[in-house]
Amino acid sequence: MSLVVYGAACALALASGLLFRRPRTVARDPLTLSTCVAIVLGGLVFVCSAPLTLAAVNDLTGIPNFGAPLTYGMLTAYSCSLIVLLIHWRGGPPERVRRTALLCVVAYGLLVGAVVVLFALADAPVERLRDLDTYYANTPYMREMILCYLLAHTAAMVILCGVCLKWGREVTGLLRTGLRLILTGAMLDVAGFQLTKYTAVVARWYGHDLDFLSTSVAPQLASLAALFCSAGFVLPRLLPPIAAHCLSLGEYRRLGPLWSRVRFVATAPKPPSPWWQLPLARLRWREVSIHDALLALAPYFDDGVREKARRAALSSGRDTHQARVAAEAAMLADAARRAAARARPLDPPSTYRLHATEVAGPGGLVELAQALAATPATGTAVKVR
Image (cartoon, rainbow, N blue to C red; front, side, top):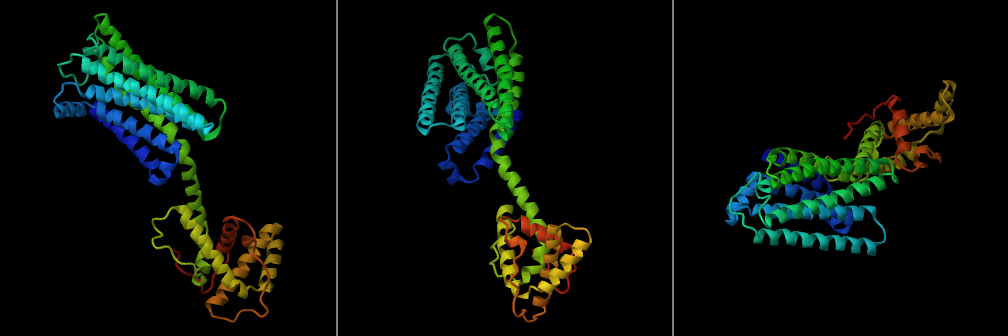
């Protein structure tokens, strides 16, 4: 059991670490902060509920079963954090969001206090690391403490299911996918973890023994439910930047043929450690460097070479735009060859503007790079960095 819950805790810690990679930004963003808090609390619940952790806490404090109110209080706080996260995720007027979140924190704070007080009033001298809920199901005050944390968690999961069902009909894309994952996790929690816990406890009230539901089935389903919920909260926030970085990496690589021809004239300063930079940052630097190099090669542009290549492209069946790009690639290759040979610039210089310099973003440069890749190079081949 310890291995299962520790594994779930590690997965939650990884998800939180991905969101918390920029602490200053997180501190200014209530949504990201509440997401991190919810995931961290979920991980702490699993850590605290592991029998190894419970035994260590009990030995450290010298109080039998002291790990119980710690775990149940943590679970109640986790339930609260899920509701607060949904409040921030749904959004609305800032004042109303803050007020609703504060009311939720106060209500669940009182429940955490109730868990601690009920444990202090109870008589639970026998240490139970795996079956405390069922072993003390009929013990005064312990019985109430167990019901208190279960009902608080049930309320949070029911609210979570209701909001996900309602909101899921109003949104699309990744947000809807995230809500479906959260709904799946919440339903697994209700139908798996909570139902098995309630069944095992009620069975004890009537003199039956279904402890295996609480000790063996519930932890497994709780771990799976937490992973689904965490994935639902994290993926809509992580996938868009990941997709953007993948797209940037692809465009960075497709600019390679163009960069290899013009880098010898670029004067843009090289980043101190380009290997660790994010793809988007590296793409921006390569774009700036290429534009700088194109500006330096402009005095070598030969309109005659361009026009000859354009006519050849048109006669081969290419459309007007493709012929223009192919002609610019031929002109650029010729300019790079003569610049590398330290030939004199043309006099008068060409006033022609490349298509890639007239459009925003790297799309025009990528087109030019792909056309240039099919243009033979002479004397300008340089290793791409």
